[in-house]
Amino acid sequence: MPRAQRLWRFARSGSGVTGLLVVVLVTAAALFAHLLTPYDPVALNAPDRLQVPSAAHLLGTDQYGRDTLTRVLHAGRTSLGVSLASVAFALVIGATLGVLAGYYRGAVELVIMRVTDVLLSFPAILLAIALLAFLGGGFRNLVLAIGIVYIGPFSRVTRSAVLSVREELYVESSVAMGSRDWRTMLMTILPNATAPLIVETTLRLAYAILAEASLSFLGLGAQPPAASWGQMIAEGRRYLSLNPWPTISPGFAIMLAVLGLNLLGDGLRDALDPRIRD
Image (cartoon, rainbow, N blue to C red):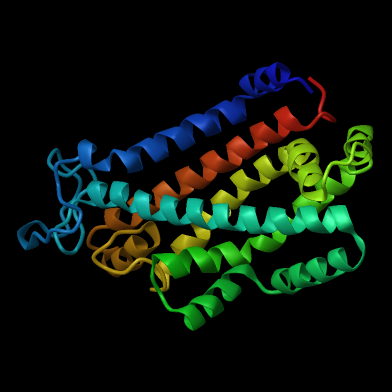
């Protein structure tokens, strides 16, 4: 399908365009958080603790007097940063394994797919918790734990895409012309198998945000005073009866980010799948 036609199909997708706008809005708010509010996200201000929304604090303040809106915006940097880094890690490793399995088949495919089956046999959040218990906390280990969890889905999706194109004439022509295996896989097969990977990436980003929020809620993610959406919910739930905004606000931010990514994924799927007619 020509690139112009794919762009046109995506532009006609209401869900895709809406999801893209939401993702851009959430990302921009996180990147420019320091310009959008005048408050320090970690500075304590005891006299202003647990205030309800007002002109000075649009979403109120938390139990330490910190501006909730500022915390939510800065927490977006942590949550989105972890999700992007972990999905990028899983994409590189998973796609590499999937291409090798789909191209070579035989023993290589058997070993890779069995390792993938082992990863997929564990519930994602439990496997991430187990990895963090072994590796310890911190940004790098959190990225590594979530990334390892999602290697399996990426390798399976890539393998399926490679199997669907490896017998095409242009691949056979590349092999017949003496192209090396790595060049055939990288330059011929992989570019024609990217459509499902693009869609899978958007969906895994949404799952990674939820995984990071869950782990932070359990105390295995970002540590105070750094802000993350899951950690804010965990801290604010103790004061729901006094001021629910420190809990509602990060929850709404998670919902908005995940919704945007899911809508974007639906739009990309409709635009990139040639079986879907206009």
